[in-house]
Each structure stands twice: as C-alpha cells, then as structure tokens.
Image (cartoon, rainbow, N blue to C red):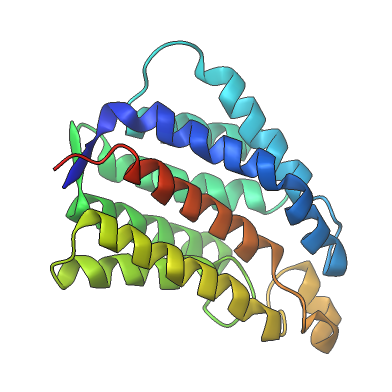
Length: 213
C-alpha cells in the first residue's frame, strides 16, 4: 500500500483544518498550567499556511516545507521551531518521490522525532509533545517491521499518540515554562502533547483517505 506524493496538499490542509477545529480545546488545556494561547498560536500559523497554499498542486515534500517555513516564521514561542523542524524533516525524507510507502513514511516519522528531540532536548517522561510523538513513531515502525499494512500501521500510530497524550496527565513537567510549577503541573494534560496528537491523528486520517493498493 502507498499514497501518491501529489496528495500532499490535501494532507497538509487536513492538518490546518484539524488545528482550527481544536484551537479552543488546545488553549483551554494550555490555560490550566500555561499562558492559554497554544491553540490560538497554532491556529494562526496553520491558517497562514492554508492561505499561502494557493490553487496549484503541491507534492508532500513541498507542502510540508511550506508548512515548516510558515510555522517557524509566524507561530512564535517554542512550538514554531519544534513543529517547523518536525515537518521539514519529514519533507526531506519524502522529496523526489512519486509514491510514499510504509518504509519511507516510517523513516520520515523517525527523522521528525530525531529533529524535534535534538532541538528541544526533551525525552519521554518530561511532559512534552515527545510523550505523544515518540510512542506514535515507534508504533508505526513496529507495525511496518512486523509486516503490517499501511492502514494498520496508521491505526496503531493513532492509538499510541492518544495513549501518549493521555499519559502526560500524571507527569510532572521537567521542560519548558510549566516545569517551574513542579508538582502543580501534575494532573493536567500537556498542551504540546495534545496538539501533537491532533496533528498525528489528522495526518493519519488524511493518508488513510488516499491510500492505494
């Protein structure tokens, strides 16, 4: 199974739509232990991206590159560089390809994870988006290595993303502004993990809609 790289515009715009639908939810979570602007900032960046796409076709690499540049330049805070890095690393791994299969997509996810961990310095257990991203990437890779098809790997990725997001509720923040709260950060989901889950699930759903045998 695979999807055509020319579906990149559709996939990337699905991310923007998902962020817009969840902007209030993300800001509400962020407001419990943060500034309360995470959803608004995310939506600002993704809305700008959607407005810059235009009417032409974009393959996956070019769509993700444009999204990365927009987030890095316009979203502000820590999320711009983190998500910008995530998408540019995925762009690099898919450039020049007409079809994206499970192995290529697994490599793109792994490159994204490495890039985000490198610039952010967070690990699983620090109460950040890594607690969502890393289990999701590992779940997809595990499915591929075990001979699973694209659909099954994406479903496993989504389930792991949700579980990773939810796991942050019981964590004490060790990285970022909320780390200053210590034990007071426990009992609240991390907003970055929540937005990462929104993006991963939206990407998976969009890809599932364009898969070919």
